[in-house]
Image (tube, rainbow, N blue to C red; front, side, top):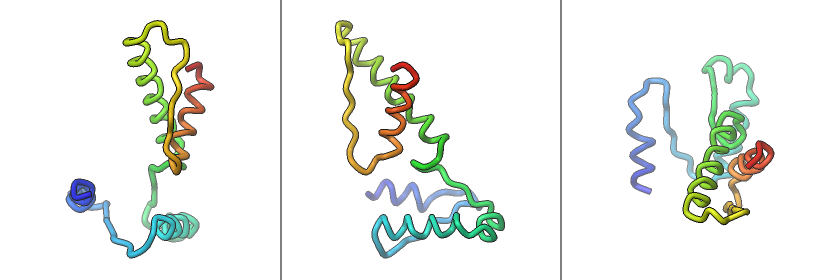
Length: 105
């Protein structure tokens, strides 16, 4: 979207570089994986990422489930079970839901 494009192209930080890839999401994922698998490159540029395979992001996403559960049960105090629907392709999000459940939700 235009908003997403502006978010990516107007970052003022000197260590953030946006690139355009003529390809699919899988093509981009291949580039990222190759970059992380190249130890010399990864260490030289201090490569880091926050995505669905990053534990910090998954942990942060567990809060969505708790927050949503609390909002639903605030409006419907008799609700004993709250079900969540997660779109396909959002493995990190569904993993966060799994951990939220394991944490007692």
